[in-house]
Image (cartoon, rainbow, N blue to C red):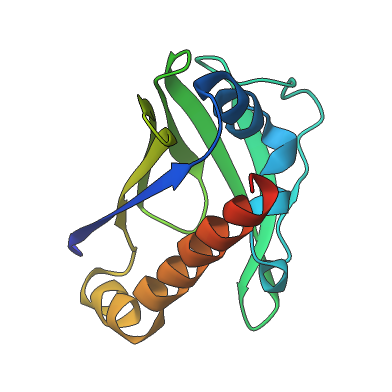
Length: 153
């Protein structure tokens, strides 16, 4: 079995909690905050406009050499204006658990992402994480940080 990896990113956005929540709880904005080189697109037809527990969202993503993967996540937990959690139900990881936390601070909203993930293929997944998966995820979240700074300036 491969290891479970995790990372955390914290960012301050100069907006109200309601503005941050409205933006990040709308699945249509996922593609907007994902690097274009991933070929990310939401493909589910009936996912709704705002997150809710039990919601399934389907995507296509091309993270490696233009190879397209199907990915389905479920929104498992929601506390409006405070946090939500998405978990992979089908896709490239053997585990994907992504927490999105929002906390009001004097400068606006502190947004924290906490991700736990595991790559399939036992020790080969661990090698893949060391060689490229970890860096790719860091690239995705750094892009999100930069693009949200631009969106909310």
